[in-house]
Length: 218
Image (cartoon, rainbow, N blue to C red; front, top):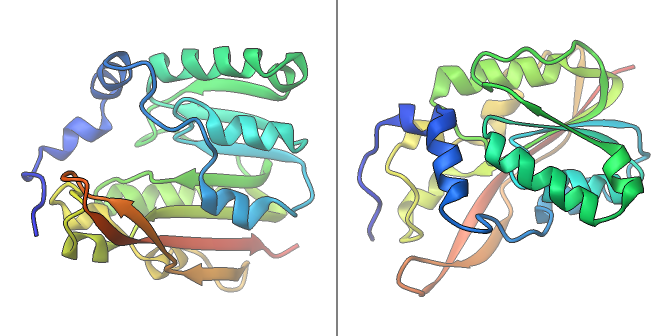
């Protein structure tokens, strides 16, 4: 079992780090929407969506093709420029349904109770910053709207998949649910589904996602 060295977590939070990562290659991500987003949201009535940590735009563009009006937010201007270009390539209707906003996720305040869906996939911050982010994301969901948070589960550190050796940056669905007021929220899904991946040496490995899908009571 091997893990990456323990990094300085401030690297993960800066615009400079992410701009450089996106500049280093033509595509950091696959270009496909996250499977947990598709599983959880494919049959949900459309509206206004906020995609936090939108990266190169695959999730936001998928939502737009389903009829959502999406605001994609990311710290990296390089990623946002790439996302906007890909939305334009998908057609004028998709470009019109997507807007892109640069923000420092650690301190950014989304509009209160504005969105029918707030989605954040694999946004990994140190514990207190993560809890603060999840509270702010929950605050952006309007009554009757949904919060979907997906991340790497801490059990991945027991595999050879190569996660950064910072346990505090991984989380469980229960930790996400803990920031939600039960009087205001109904938990629809709190699960740790598995999926197959390859570790840095190309060996197959089973990893797990933390999935929390909740609806704000109307």
